[in-house]
Image (tube, rainbow, N blue to C red; front, top):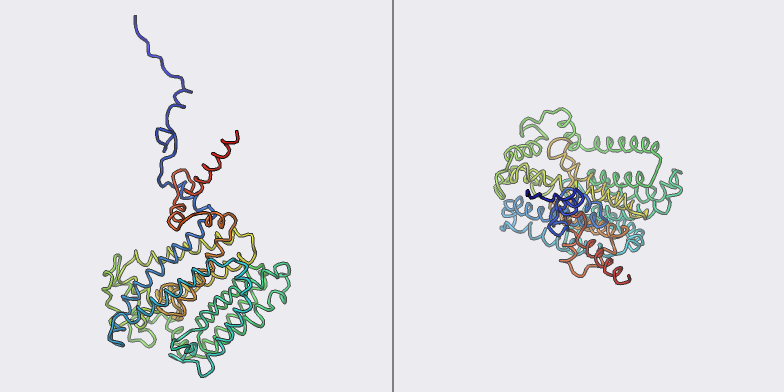
Length: 451
């Protein structure tokens, strides 16, 4: 007798065979996949962690590069290679404290701070033109406060974002009327604050503030036709201010003429040496601390031109890392804007997005020669106490906005420790975060008990 093998049916075969990516028990194996990462990016806690990680890495990278870029100049000025770095580290510590406090403030508290913030910003900016004011390289945009130099216009950016978001959120139903859109954001407060900054001859900061106002009006729903007039007025204003400064006109003329082929051409020294730094870095860089341009060749290597030192020492991977991190911040802001139900949250996130990305674009464009040298720091990276503290305060506001998104606050507040909150953000192969899976299991056990 011939023995016959009993073949299992197709139904029994499919039931017995584990699913792809699953173990013998049929449960998904932990790990990363494109689907799990995409699912996590769509979760309500993703913007919070994206802002937190991107801002932390940018700040940490900035501290390392400030130490490297400033070491030579700091030694020549003070006898120590660490003076500038230690000052920046102290400002970073103060900024992180403010960011943590700001991230825990409810959005309604931020909204209530709008009017005190704008009046304080105006008062500090007016102090620039008193005996407290300090002039440096033709710009009068600093004050001496308690033995420290403070740049009020940097703190004014935060005030402008909060005030503009609060005002336009209240006026959202009448934004189609130009006078309601303009008063009081543009007239009088925005015009006063930007005008005082321009009076101190700081065109770069004034342009960023103007971009914040325009970005808020766009996000607030001002009809597109009005931006044609605003753009024309802003263009004429920038042209007049540029024509009134021989230094600015020289930078613009050399940029338009394309005559900066060597550093000895008038007005080309800084631009050409920044290009030398990027060229010397090449693909992989000279190595951390090995910059040649910081040895008295490239002016302001730890301030406005820190990206050139990053490219020289860390090469293309270093510069691309900076670009990717700002792209992550942009994506996180976009997620907050699209997911928020509160108009103040959407507007404030829009203002911070315009501030960070606009300033980064101007700085990077100046370093690589895409724009004339404007003179604005790279947010969170460049040396400068007021700039770093105000940027970190903006990060704290952005984290508070991310916490207010539907589903995010309950998820973040429901975790017992910082470690568990961090681990809960890591996606698994099932496409759910660990926190989501835990809540599902708890819900399932309670349902099973009631049956």
